[in-house]
Image (cartoon, rainbow, N blue to C red; front, top):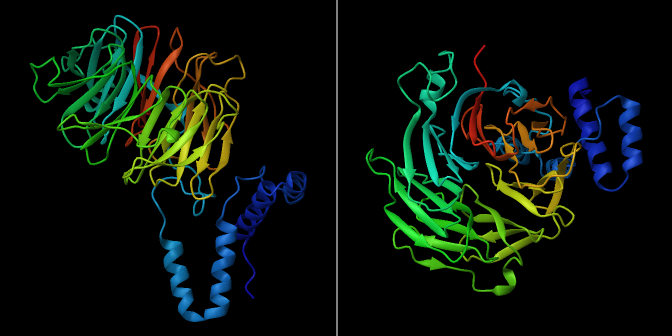
Length: 423
């Protein structure tokens, strides 16, 4: 039998230690980890069980199964996948290396922001009722201009549109996945759709009148439908073309308090909702029925955000307990808890947790310290803090889906665009 090399042997040890830790043998896992000199226990994974099953099939069925095993192992999903890449080292820059390269100001607190699907545009919304759309390429092109403000030396202003049609705070923004349409929700209880391809247009082309403040929205990946969360516990599903509204048929499926975040998976088979009732619910994207509930997901604390990973296997959530968690859908369990934020004081305002663009890192602003906390998404290693530079609480955090860039908005009236400059 061929002797495994040191790297392979360490990987096997890590799988065994992680399984022992998950099965409740925490002290045994720690003792074994210390005795063989590995890092702290890794997150538990089904990889060990899956490998054992495949080896058993190979032993029983002969050479034909070996081909199937190879094919199955080569089918690696996009984004984080702890069944296949638990030992992969990050290839993207650490979040602490990002810098502010553009700064814009509203006339009131900035509490909503979004990137479009290809990361070429971002938008910010404010309590002053305005929405600004920014061209990311122009922001990066101005990087060496010396002035990071919107009134810098370059005449090519990154702010390509400023939209006005709400009469109260803009609470949520989302871009259409295929068309030049931006949708905003507000405390004025309306959802408005803007065609930003027309330079002169500042008013909405369509308006949906709701019964309470809009708290979150998510587009179906095909663009035909829009999920809308309000202060009411029941989520609405709107046909974008006809504005017809649908709600779930079973009242028992619904949350018992305001829904604060929702998100479609990339294949639209599922969507997830997080609520102030402390629960996270997973819904069937076709029937609108709840198929799974993570009760008291953050030990009863209100949920701040809930988002699918790119491959749809996991949900990343954050709560007012200042803990970020990664949930595995196949086993309906919390796989990883990212801890350490909130150590300087109690979190008052909800804030979103996010992956970076390739899901190497988990990122979460710490309200009291004014810094960005980050972790290696696979092994939970804490990374260096990044001071966000706002003079008031950071109220919105969104990362680009395609590049090392993110946007923060604050009660200091400012929105900052952060980017990892090329060396």
